Length: 251
Length: 116
Image (tube, rainbow over all chains, first blue to last red; front, side, top):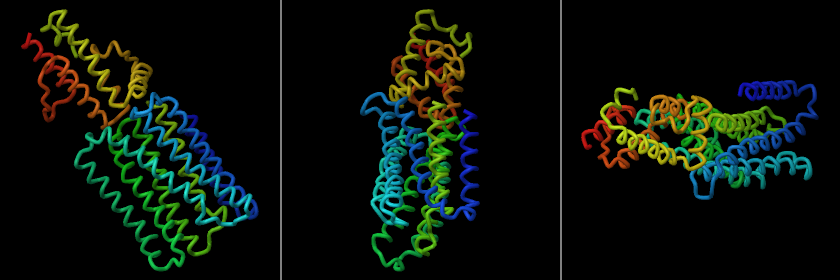
């Protein structure tokens, strides 16, 4: 178990250093970022296939369905990353946003939400009133921060309706995932599965910040392939990879 | 559960209780489905050296093992197992505040003694 943490830490530090020192190789960081993201997303899908294989029993059984939805969600996110790579490497579109890739990413939220919801619902009765208040408070704080950072500034300023809808859809989708995943963390807090849910929550928070920042920098026209915001998305995939790995090891 | 706790039941009654307990655990863990139940048994054996067959004799170790995996969420499984056990023994299940799983099992045993 410790080996995966060490390997992930080395990978995270290594990738961070590559992004930090991008000034020394400005022409390479774009292709590097566009290639690494689908690779890490692919690893995250693979990490969800292992538990799917372990927990799959038959269609209609709770754990089988839950892990099917997790894998499906991550597979859509991988397709989003792959789509982005195709746009940049094959079609030479510098910043393909919004694009078909966003359709895959946004669709991916649906199975992930269903998976989280079904999982949490099994244990929902373990939630105390205090836990519900904590989750509500944390969600409100995050929702408020996201509204202030993205949604309110975008209102009426974005000339393109599709871009505005996509800009808002991401943080809202992140928030909907967070609403459920925070409950998962509170339910399994103190147990080994709590570690898995902590990584899931970490991934969703990172994704939320990444989506907010991405909307902001694209609106400012300062986004480029290899922008440090890409690193947040990569971190989020790594956290999901760890979450599923921990889960399959702890149960 | 200590050995003393079982003194009130005859050997046959005790066997019946343990069988009902094991079935209640089997059914309660089905909350996660067949694959989830298998995974739990596997982890209890590898993590706590607790085999499925030993659960009726080591309910405390069983609950500690589950708590180690599920944290606060274990309450859902405890309740499901408790309800199943009472139903299998033909007893009336009543949820009591500040009554943990082990106390619930002890109550079931006591009620069974009185019933017999």
